[in-house]
Image (cartoon, rainbow, N blue to C red; front, side, top):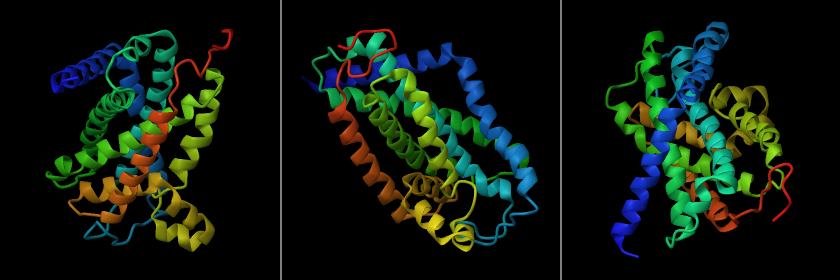
Length: 267
């Protein structure tokens, strides 16, 4: 296979994902409602309780809305990645993934390209959220909007690969949503998305260490530091390493017709 074949496949998958997104505009709106509610309603209730001191990457005292905005960016990618992983498995059983997997191109390339396409769509939604966050005075540096892009893409690949890894090992596809609840909410709440880790340490040392071992914590910190033009090599390194591990496990473990839909006979 020539490089041109890989490029045409890459462009085709990206184009199809954006067309699919354009046809599901209600999904775009619903993806923004959740983080905006947290930013406006939840933050208003906790603003007086959770004063944020001067902690990296911030140079001064900040509002609670400013602190949780990067975590809510991670939330958008987290929920979209899990929904995208589910759609990949449904497509594999009933739709375009069956045709895509018949391509002579390597399966890992096809799957990673698909994950990247879904991630780019999620990144677009994150930028719309950040623009809306300006209305509540969440104002990162102008260059931060560009600097945060690699962290957003890396986070989307990590979470997309995790979702695909889980989805491919679930024998009954209808159980996927229930299983995701045991993945999404612990990953989100036991991270630094809503509270600084030093507050976690004060409240419960064992919970603090769980947050430290949570890869979503490091993804959020990579987003947070990048958005404010700071470099966090530990967060980026851990996120990148976990992404590689999840991607290898997901692409090597992906088998056609492993998951079955209720009412179908096992393949």
